[in-house]
Image (cartoon, rainbow over all chains, first blue to last red):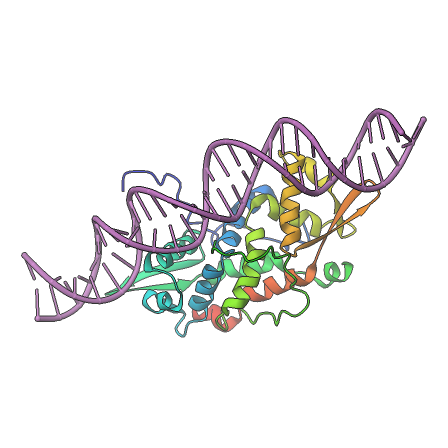
Length: 127
Length: 127
DNA sequence: CGCCTGTCTTGACGTCCGTCGAATCAAAGA
DNA sequence: TCTTTGATTCGACGGACGTCAAGACAGGCG
């Protein structure tokens, strides 16, 4: 493990983040943007967006990699890479139970992102 | 991101898009993911997230490039490039009036993105 | 027209990203 | 222990991205 990987985001948005009056209500400060942007970035790939949805909409709230991988025309390592991206963005958690690894969505950050994008009637009517 | 990119999008999400039961409710189809991911991607940069917020939260619902640019330690062309990205993602509209160019948010797509990320109590309680 | 100011486009550079094959690690069985 | 199966990490390649300097374009004013 020694080598690189100095920075290891694994964004922790659950704790302190004062989180986000809507984007259209007050200007997002640079620090908030720096914290939240990586989450949007992680969702900015069609494969990861589908992975996120498959995980979040799974029956028991969790999905096995073994169910995720065959849903795409991509190799295992590539799916694993995308899952790592989602993990480091703080969007999902992973847990190994026996042979398989299960992924679970973190609803708090999803709510934060949704809140940031929410538009109140006032702003909506304005434009 | 996923390869291809058939033609430059200039995503038109306002019209037809069936748009999006919450991501955690039903699995997002590949076509929907392909259409929505670029919008998230566009928000996945701190500068663009701030630009989007500055535009959406502006007094009259629109912001002049001349007000946007000096808010960052970046050159004019770079800001212009980011604005173009937001435009091509369908997140903002631009209009030239005399000397200055004004940008205006498109609330519909913001609402769509927010709806996609929204978590119902059921799914929230589950995880 | 000519000049100035504001904005966008172009071309280039270095970095990051998505993808794969091969190697590695982890758990379960023979 | 050795083998098998599932998942991640490593190393590499090609393409996309963020940034800037320089040039081009548009509108206003003498």
